[in-house]
Length: 426
Image 1: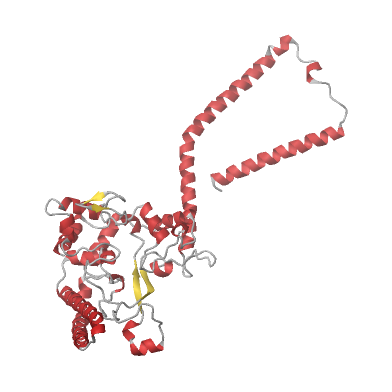
Image 2: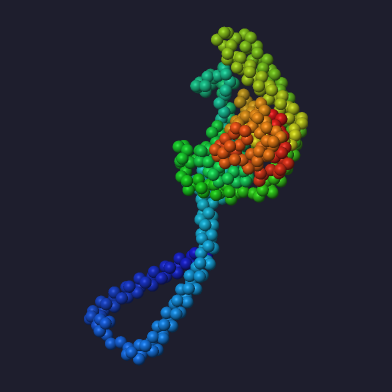
């Protein structure tokens, strides 16, 4: 039985005793209805008794009560900070338990069919990461954005069909090392537009969770966190071998299947470009713009395929780190890119590495413009490692949105510098 339970029982006993006393007094009055003589008319002790032993007893009791009160106040003064800390810890533990219920799926210990949001379906039962099915619409210029998906479309324009992909859901075990509480709250409340991550908060206008439930989820995510040393060790190990979605190591790139798939992607991209150029040559005047855009898209796809083939043959630490740590936000399509089947569908292949997605475009020398070398190296290192608060300036002309993760607790100094060098090469 803990102290809190003992205190509750003690107070209940006091209340019960008081009620028993009140009932006893009421019943006693009914059994003895004759009025009692007023106290001011009742004979009391004589002065020699009142000012002698009786007074000494009264003063002794008062002294003892005073000592007890002083010691009690002193004890309370000493004990109160510990009690408050224990209460805060207890409240947080209860919040984490509620967050575990919200996070759980039917494979989890804390699953509740009436409350659980099934976050574990995507992020894994242990929060270590996973994948989610997601549908991507075709952006082929030959397709009508408002067209109906049916058998006729599948037969006549299969390249216009939506594509279902396996979107990599990140590990939450390092989330608290990369994001502070306000960032985690923002992500859970408003979601990640264009990804499987929905908006859960009422504030977003789309979700159903009030602030307490969001806080419970944030507390639960923080409870999953690993240590900085373990996170850095894992990032180092992933340079050689990485099996989680949207993560590649050298062993992955060296696999014959990966390199054969890269070569096939280049061949397919060349064939598609040739076909698009033939369609453009034979296009009517009204279709020239449409097929010109198609040719440009196929040229970009071929460039990306060739870039990926070069990556499979020789990738620097900086490039691998960028793919595993940064590409989710800075490279469109990376979250569902499969190295062993890069051309799985019309919209599945990734686009130019660092070309921008949820995060800004880092190519065309933008990093060097924002953080001019060599004086900008310290600012770029600071930006990657600790970020900048929302609405604060960074670099030459940047204004932080407050959403950039900070990697100082998950990557070593040398790894961040390797990413900096790779970004500058873009």
